[in-house]
Length: 330
Image (tube, rainbow, N blue to C red; front, side):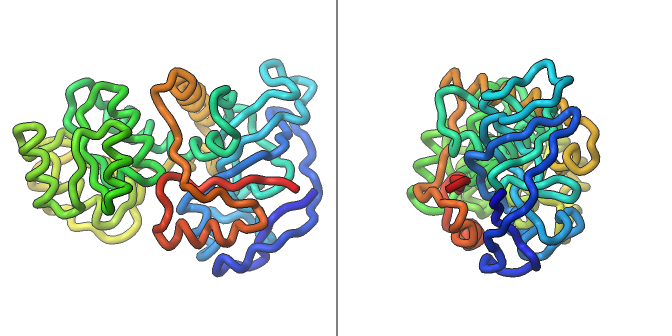
């Protein structure tokens, strides 16, 4: 089968088309004809730096996948050939990625694709939806009426988190830069948009909520965003990040006795434990999409998989609005 792979780590130019063996079916897995994938920061970081979670070279990257089941194991009782699926199921050590014509997928990691969206839209959902869900509901335990700050509401995780928080009855203020991103965040359900600096956030919260403090701050990028979340929340509030790399001054968190959390949604994929929960989350995400409650936002430019280097570069340059989708095949 054909695959876009890397033989060394480096810039977007390291991708090359090659021929590799089609995966062999095994128990507990399904073979998927890949239709689309999407680009997440972890994808370009693996390509660029080759961190510990990287698959062995030559490597096929990308975890997010949507496609059609082509083969099932004889012991499979739920899935059938022809089912349309989506999930985050590979592209890391021990798991082949979605930049190939076919992908062997653990059946516990996937759910039925929402019927009312395209394969490209479905491929944009898995990693960011699971991350947002775990941040808001598992770590944050949000409830109706909670006042929430979401940094980067126009980004991949951010735009899903805004919609999920609104669905849960929370009140959301998000940060965003540029008029197009601010309009997008407001259209998704945020009550207001603030600039990234803490003064703007507190002034906006005071105007909207009547108080300058939040119950929870969800940082969708790391670095300064996590510090902003920590500064924004109330005493004994919660600050959550999806990127704990780097150095942080936790003195403010200590002075307010905050509950700090980190979301690392790839853990079940890497360790093999808790994979069923990802499938359950995606099943609920599919229901919300089909009900019109949740929608993935795609960047205006959808790439062919032969242009995967350009797709990586666009996300790495911070020029995308929503998720960058990539069509697979041909």
